[in-house]
Image (cartoon, rainbow, N blue to C red; front, side, top):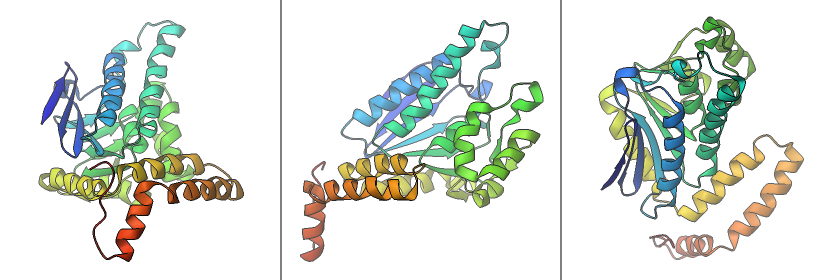
Length: 261
């Protein structure tokens, strides 16, 4: 097990899982400029480590993340604000760009940019006490960037309800709406996420990377364009060493041996 630590973010590896943990628990883990930049760097660092096949984003304390650090948004210039939101965009883009599957492990509140991070992750599992919201409208700052992944995760009408009212939804509602993959008692959250990560990590890392990249390439395409792209993707995938190994292992009734093991 290895660990990299900063004041607000920890990266830890316990093969095959790399965990990025928000650590400013006393402030409910705000996504400050420094935190977002460091989280982006560590996310890419974890993904590049050959021991890591799945990444978990977690947080310490009573909240997953309360969103942006509002102190950084008060009394700033247009360019200052642009720098903050561009760093946020880069973090969310990194979650999709890294080839490793990324799972959000959520307890407590995930608000505004914190909710955005959950919606951006490939998968999300939450404790049954978790709450989600985009309350920016209540302070005059509409949650426009959280709106991007939220709308794609839960649909237009439900996203607009959250965005326009700023009301929080509970974990079971978030599960029903499609923001989450599972809701479990708080004392089962860690084991549930670990079990999910390990099941995913049993597959070929190369194949998972191909599949994750393909998912985001096709998701907003028209159906004919998506089929055109994915036909080529699957064709190229089929001739990789791991695909051929998997096919032959199935035919020979044995376990495959992936190239990244």
